[in-house]
Image (tube, rainbow, N blue to C red; front, side, top):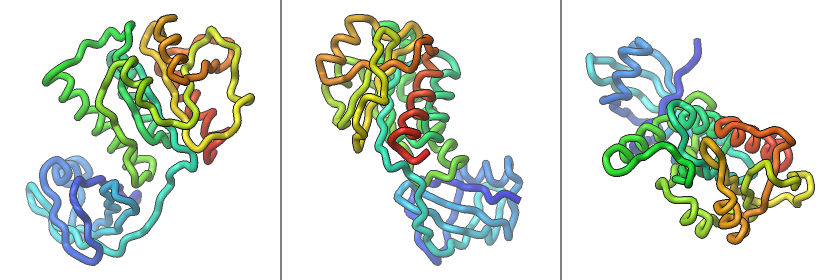
Length: 241
């Protein structure tokens, strides 16, 4: 039987008791139907993970006995940053989930000229919380113990001025430059547009800030396909694939 991996946003101490409540307890008790004696793996994004056993289970909370800390990590040797235009519906959720599985280090949601999703104020705050939960769930599934950083959504113009990656790329199909011609960096950033892609002006703005044009073959990829393809290629060429 698979041992559930659970992220909790609180300190974890080895060889101690830990009470779980709220949504975490609801998920374990009502969704997974966990009972006393069942094993868990706990992590909090601070590095490594902890084996635990449920000692007692109530209606709305449960108590775990936490065992030793295991310094297990499966982070990529390549630090990757994905700046992606916010897209509609479940496309953005899918990109965040798969990018996490592919080892992305940092994700920056962007509002570009062709972004059709309008978010601000409370709606934006709720969407960011939703995106954060997508990252947590993906880490629980793929055995990552370190969450990707989810940056505050920003404009493309602001982002390209602040990215600190050693090698920066703006993806579009109007160039013939490919990855095989570039020396391996320690960190890489990918700038990808929303539905409809980046405008010519946005590409020029990015290139003026040190972003190199990069193509992924002769075909035009959708906004949810391009980041997954690009991250996979980066991990294969420079990372841990």
